[in-house]
Length: 403
Image 1: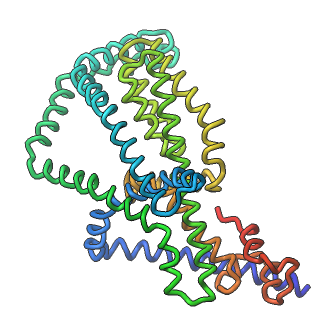
Image 2: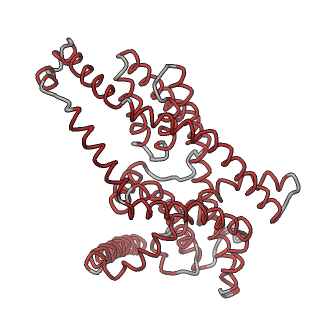
């Protein structure tokens, strides 16, 4: 009876604490919307340095497998980091020198063919409206009323292009930001590669001796989470992009290289990215023929089946351990707040936060999180009764699951 009463009180305390934490979070969000002007200087500063640091961080984790391979070949320390950096520069330089001319050529051809593209699209809509399938779906009357005003679309595109081209300030600003990112990102990456292993020891110097092992473990797990996510996502993106380019080229889809690269990049956005990446292929194929649309759909579906069943489980697997509903909420929230950058970074930031929280909950010296631990584990910690005292932190970590 006493045990049941204590358990009921414990569950009640957990519920109350969760409610209080949610109330605090909602209150902070509400207050921040009212005093957002106070954070303008901070946001300006962060937006200025964010680009180079994000690019450098992405490339840093991308190079870690190469650094580990060099370590196995007895090339260690700064020599391995510098060698990996030089190899990256050579690969990126050669790849860009090969791809950029082709991409520019395909973009120019796409813009030049825009009038005929609109004409073909209108013809496609008209033909579909008169088909038996459209009649059965009761779409004939709707599609028959669709009229594509080519002149208005071309005028809109031309006006915006000319406005952007004549706006000297906007052009100079964009060029300046691009140059800052281009020149600063490799410099930041070089120092990441050179001194990245010093971050954890330098942080531990400012902490008491008894907290240094915990901090080292926390930083190690955070780094492992980021490494797993970015390396896996880049590998997955690369494979999907290559398969898409090959598939679209074989089936004769126009602008196969450009569309394949777009499909690979969009694949970084979970769940909705693959569908967004298939839209350009279907849209361009619709100007050719029904058969070409079918080929584009087959390629997109085949690539996604290969990715979902073979590539993604083996490259990334379940390393993130995030529920699909949580992913959707993260995409909507982060995308609404920070745009495309939020969509890309929302999941890894959440994964790191989840890792930090799991480490804090597993640490018995932080009593605030006792309510989140298993009751038996908390009682064992309090009494010192543990069957395996050598690895209490590991056992606690195994029992914690934060979705």
